[in-house]
Image (tube, rainbow, N blue to C red):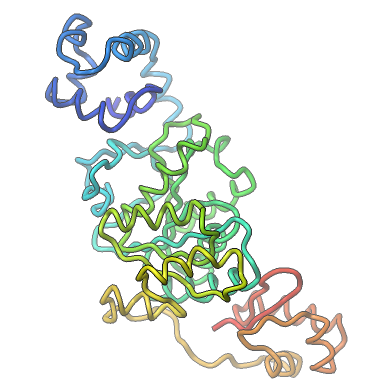
Amino acid sequence: MIAEALFAHFPKMTVKRFKEGVAAFGSADAFFDADTYVIKEKLPWDEETKNLFLMWREDIDPKRIKKILEQEHITVITEQDEQYPPLLKQIYDPPFCLFVRGKLQLKNQYPIAVVGTRKASAYGKQITQEIVSGLAQHGLVVTSGLALGIDGIAHDATMQAGGTTIAVLGSGINRHHIYPAVHKQLAERIIARGGAVISEYPPGSLPSKFTFPRRNRIIAGMTLGTLVIEAAEKSGALITSSYALEHGREIFAVPHPITSETGTGPNKLLKEGAHMVTSASDVIDVLNLNELKTFTQNAAIIPDTPQEAAILTHLSREPIHVDELAKQSSLTSREVNSTLTLMEMKGKVRNIGNMHYVVAR
């Protein structure tokens, strides 16, 4: 059993305390196995925390934890493992271990964080799908927090474009503790498509107002830069961008109208010097990744039927309601709805919500 996985279960454990223990005893295993009197003598913690640790160590059941990890197909990686995200090692407080479901392999990869509000507008949804699709098509690994809104849209858009995505949680990653619960199926799809769901918190951990900011430091720390799509001025997305700045990574933001409440965050970042992003190429240029080739053809969308041709004539990047499409295309509402459904399955159009569609480019 990996000692780091056991230490992660101690409620009072922090990165700092873990490092102090390893420094005092030479290794995580020696730290865990040390005699009680040696712990009390050598461990540079306050007496209350040392006593709590010793009581916890008496009660912990390594066999039970190992069984849970095996049942949930969770692997544990430490900083010494090759799979540990290379960029994450560079921050001042990298997690001493990560719990992983799926495939976490970022060596020689280009991870980018995409974050934003849980209450995404139609504009936010559309621009996320467009930009993230382009990033995924260039092979960038899109990393986000599995939250409602922009995060979930970013994960989904990446997979629709054939790319790989990683979700970082502020809770346990076992199936019954995926947060939010409505994204359990999204988490399973991420894993099935070759991505990963990860956390520094052990199975069974519940999310809290303290775990989300810690999660955000991982998202920013394991990526080359953070792209804020849409967010209020005080939001978790801006916490992630502040960590990115702290880690010396690039910060990107999508411009919004000055009247947009959920655009105040990105607009603030742009005022402070963030890179403006209106397409995936803006991110790729800043990161100097122009040598990456798209793995999907960027050919013009060719209609398969007269109905598709009629609809494409009136579709653009501006959202349009299905009723307006029916009116402009002279098709019946039934024809428009059935044709749009088929076109969406073919990747020709995108449904951005509330019966509004845009062309997929």
